[in-house]
Image (cartoon, rainbow, N blue to C red; front, side):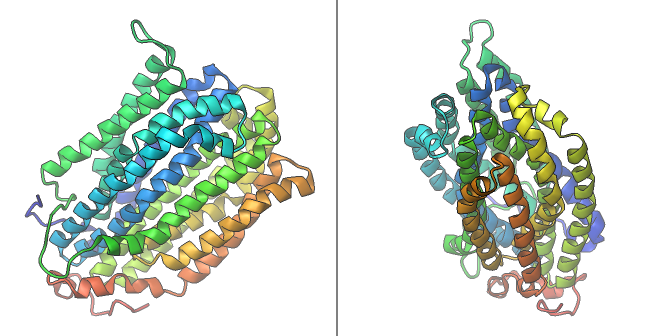
Length: 476
């Protein structure tokens, strides 16, 4: 199952800014296409009314939570595969990939169960109106029932990116999203003999696109692509699912808590009407533009961090993070100015309702003040995931997230500013959280990487690589 060809060591030899740009560019487009799944659905159901818009936009919070379970293994794979590739042990990297894919299937079945039995009650937890709950239940039951499909696809994507290939995932993502955009209006509003299915049609279009994405990765894997190591077994110390989970579980909690917090934000906003609830979902879609940029830089950074730590070059791992942070600060400042000056244009993409604009314009202006901090946070977190050191970051993120839940209800009531109070809460807590995370990262303990795993591998040849320096892995 594993190709005998050795992966390119291009990322270990080329200048960090060039390598980061080469990996981050396609990753950014892929993340944008992934967000487009929900954007396409939200834009097409706009004609069905505000309930349908609120149902589809807020469904993403729940899907994030479900897909975060898969991060337990996908993030573990990122650290294992990148560092083992960097150490020259492709076959053990293939074993990690194989076991992670099997785990994704099992976790996907949990999402399927939730979709079949709990889709509508989930909207009840968010305090949605009966109309939003009905529409959302129909949409969410379908996309959650098919959870094993996107989970496996995202794991495949993690494997290829960790191995240093972000272009192939971009091609696959583009084909899937293009299919979604074509099929969406046909299934939502009907065409010829195909009946109109409303929000359920949007869900089926998304599932079909995700199935196409998974099929693309399976074809790539079956052809032995150099950036898709896959093996049932390998010499040396075994790669265990438990090891992947120990790395991935703390990081997965970050995504889970993010989703839980936004469910709390949605429930709090729902007290102020459907327009406020819709704004929470719309603003989140707009935030996704910024998140995609930061996550792309961070994902590229994770591959560089992991491969360079595996090769015994921690100084290049540190450089990858510094360069990424500098880039995202500049980009964030530009987006902050645009969002502050033209919030109405962004809200208009999703709703023409005057009540939504009345809340949304002010909400976005407040939210714009924390974009620089959010960007730095995402780049640092995503990059360090490649080292396998996830526990400390998860602890900081989870603690602040738990604090946000009661504050999501207290702040709007205490200051009488409705959904705008939620926006200010996001800003303040974000600043606090990024200060704590950056402070921890500056200590440099993550530079040890997965040293135990690499020492146990007979294929770890980092010391023999021509480009390796004599600097020990723990050096600053």
